[in-house]
Image 1 (cartoon, rainbow, N blue to C red):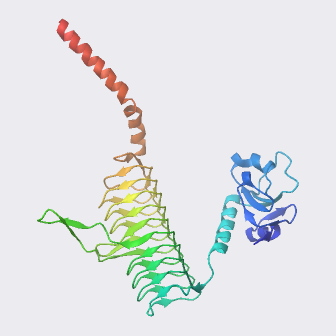
Image 2: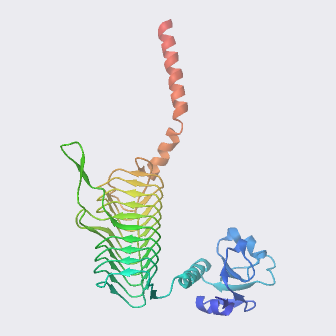
Image 3: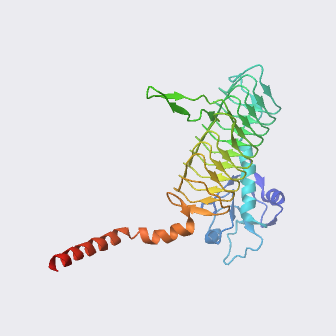
Length: 347
């Protein structure tokens, strides 16, 4: 689908400078081609605007060209070029989503309640008592277990599995092969020196505007609910254990593991490959550097932690100055011990 530069400028409430050209694709400014639209917000990339082949570039209102721009280039000036381009990306992404309709190759229990303008793709299985809200999209190969709920405008990408009685809110996005509501890791040793499985009879509750990355797994609670609060963003390949609670607007990067019953506050930021011990609490606004190990509760809000076991960032930075020199320190100690031994023999 193609749009004229003037249409895009109107959508973004910007000002068009140059020809009202037509564009049909989006591109990075350094890879721009004829008929594409790009943006410039980071000064680091400004040299590319003088050589780009893109037909339209979105720039900030205060952009001043230091060289001659390509004759074929039109500009759209806006208050925030980065934000405006993100808005276009979102609009473009909506065009890629499938249109409403229910595939004849899907299997839907007669007791399921399906809202208006819903898309259900090929090989989807929907169990008894499921409720799916208006405008939801369930792409091919998804499985929704009995009595689960899916909110309005929520999108499940191919292969997502939602177990029985789990609840997903409005306008959530769950990427391919994520698993919502698998059993928590609950086992108890018995007299035969084996492990007896503890039934996991709770569920998972995901509130509105949550995004969950591909292959992420969220375990159902032993009892009660594992809860993902409004606005949370989880990256790919994250493990969320049973009875965990993640607070509003917290973001967590890939390969993080959260053990059971841990409570993470709101507005936290967690880097990749972080490990959380179970049954601890993390204060609101906590920031945790990648590959950190969180073994105990963090009580103070809005602090930054790093290392394994994790410590406040400032303490870690001071300690790092010393432990990076441990080989030299050990060498000095060995030399000192040798000198003391030699001195004791000569005394």
